[in-house]
Image (cartoon, rainbow, N blue to C red; front, side, top):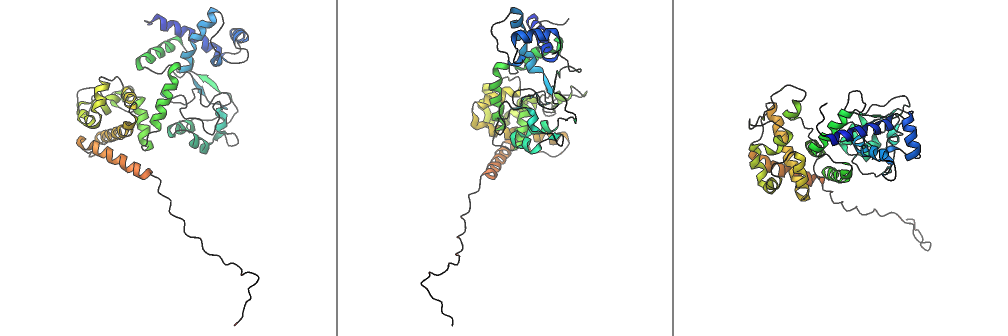
Length: 356
């Protein structure tokens, strides 16, 4: 059947039962387990505790489904804004923004203008990172008051299968994706990326580079039959990591300010590894982000045949761009308010007016 890891195959089978409990509430299977183990809640809210061996085994498959599922927005009344997967992006299905105006367990319905059947755009722009706001506003809304639906985006029919769950587990190990226990650490890391003091377009670039969603030749080759050899060195496949970090022609660029990072990272498996190591020295992240921006901008110009700056100028251009941005971001000192104009005051009652 193609399953070489029996432990992962068993976990994927258990996750199938979790999927049944989440999506088929009319079944006898669901009614029995709900009455016995979660009479006043739902599967995601159940804490591991006392229960039969079968129930404890089923709960072991819960993490797989929680990592892979995606809520399809209907009226938004069943989806927790900050805790459920509902953003239509494979690399970031859960909101990373910190709750400010909304409560932590607020529903997505709070973001919907029910009178006009559209998203409340001003509220979304004010409470979410720019890339999250763009994803949310791109989700189509129904004019009918339909229910929110749980889907499985890894299958075309939106239904969980043991095979897709098994391959999700393999991908999680291969890419070292955050498990449930590490979600808080991952969330803090990405908040740090979006909190960098660089232009928003550079933050977006860093997020895409860290999630391996840049249009490198290697990524494009998945859908388009093209030669994915690096245009710069002509030696290796142009992955995201190669295009902005490990290409031999980029080594002199990174050595200037980040020689220590090259030594510590060594043979990184992804650009996310580079970001994690650099994040340990937070004072370096802004400059690294601007350097990545200059490298990627140069690459794009070369691909379309435009003139591009030499690699020897990358570091100077990155430092200059960062300095200009910081200066433009400074809050100008408030000018002293002009002295108030003296207003006419009536003379005291003891004074008399003389008409000449």
